[in-house]
Picture (cartoon, rainbow, N blue to C red):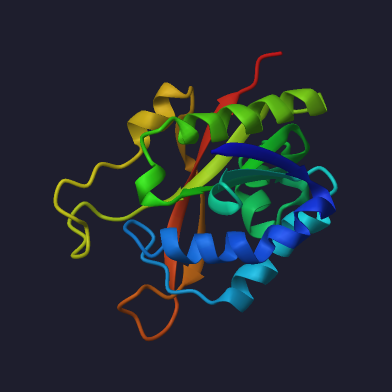
Length: 196
């Protein structure tokens, strides 16, 4: 198992691998995402086009088994930036974490912690960010597809120093596994102040 860090356009050759990984991992609760490779490639091109984006790839041999991404919030789309501007935050001072995806058999090995640490270290090295942020989907406790014993990642994120900001909200549209068409999904943000 090894970790590879890539920035900007260097991530382009790995977009298909990450797209497939996202489609696999995000099928599970709470995302229940029924997406397409074409959409994923378009979404991930935002990262390839940002010269200061970061991919943290976890490889077992040459197989990509996990990945996390980040980029300056100012390089993200309007849907991500708008909640911050509306609440008086400066997107130029925020480094945004896109996702952490890891195949089930590799969870619990410390890679999730490593994904956060690598992205935070990178944001500090860039030298102009006060906060790191990510957003997460909100699903009702009584959701019919919530697995028995499901534990959200809130405690894990809290141990990494992230705080939930429910006032920073947006929504995204995708098709759940049991839906015929896309529907709006509420998302809210978590933030951590970066110390030098």
